[in-house]
Image (cartoon, rainbow, N blue to C red):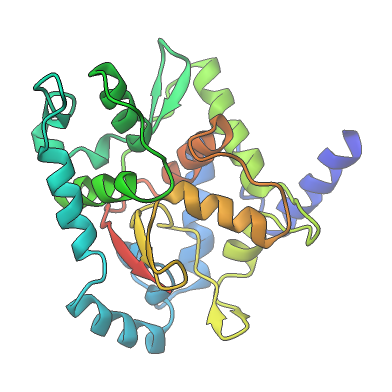
Length: 276
């Protein structure tokens, strides 16, 4: 374990000590500075557009795709699901305020339950509280409902709070540690690709910067041929580095979402999105 900690410390110091700060807010400030310094021509608010914020050629193609956005059918399907009553006569509108435009509330720390609550987890908990079966988290109906609720929430600011609570701070730290930990046969961390490697080519595609990464989910990926949630992408990243993946909405992925979304505080949610 000591060797692992020493190795991690050396790696993180090489990237500007992003994970070695004294508090979540100083972590966030250093994280933001790393990317705004690395991509000086990109306005901070534009990082919500992923790789399209740093690559002009890809952006042109993306703008054309957005004219007939492939996620529009998912938004329509999600709206139909959201408005369809449960068997008990209630619906999602009884669980979520503002007609479902609540993306800006998530993820958050629940002090009573001592865990991170994400929007997708809340969707299934709404179903179960009303006698309905839970739905799968990665794609399908969940991605559709999330797409609709995210669309309604466009423009809401990312304002994740890490309270001064030992349990909340521990969850944040576990998400941070997972983000920077090398794993799998390729021995890559999340930051290796989307921090130090951001802007570099992998085959014909550029790696996107991590700032703003969670803002545009769920996404329609051309590679998937459909919609997927953020945790579906987490699982795919793990498998790409030949590491074991975790279940969507597992504790570690929720804590990873908590950390990574906090890193983008002050930016706007703009999901759903379209990506390669």
